[in-house]
Image (cartoon, rainbow, N blue to C red; front, side):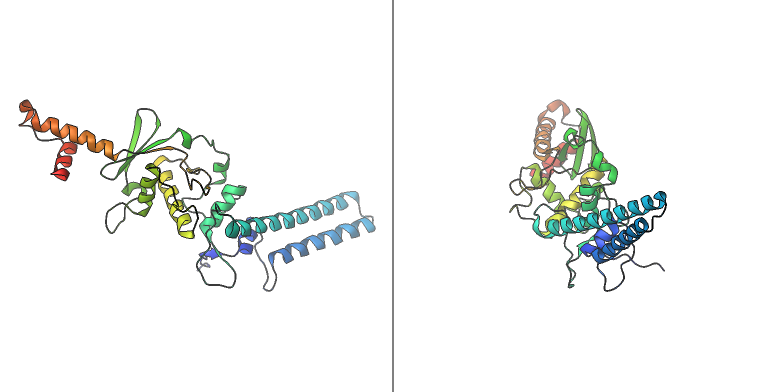
Length: 288
């Protein structure tokens, strides 16, 4: 049996994966290992020049030395940025794991999201449906700005990229229903709140639970539209996460349409014998 995938990683383990460092011996840090490679490459390069080896060999060793030092520098910068984002940056996507260990650990999917979104580094084995692919980084950023989404009655939701052409799905289709209660879940509540211009998170301070919630909502919106880039603008304390698309709570309008239709069906003597249509009948049933 293969080794099971961990649920979280340390910052060093995350950066090691980003630069394809497969093995770090016990009692060594990532930076110590990379420094050792750079020192070895430098010594061999210097010795080649002293020994007056052929120019082709010297050039090869020079390139190796430069590559090793560049890798060391890249790892140092990635490690610094990951730690800063995770612990000092309010709008970071990195989720700190709740595992009680001596070193802070971070969830795999949040690290994969951070690496792909910020640096175009793909970690497919850590990714989830919410993680952007490397191709998403170069995707037309205006795609979501062309989308309009409407929350409809009866736990339905629709979107349009072209005026007048709508595609509709149910909350269940895109993970907005609680399977136990069969009612809209917390993720749906956030979306409905955003449609009514409510800020998320309300306080403007991000907690791990907020990052998890917005990640799930991203997945639902991507499932609805098929667009893989991030549907939200970059977080800021004043506005929270703001949609990049037009979002409307259309349930009230649907209710008003049903009310008018019900009144027409109920009082038109020439049509009194006909059964009420489904939408109007539902409105009367709910408002008697």
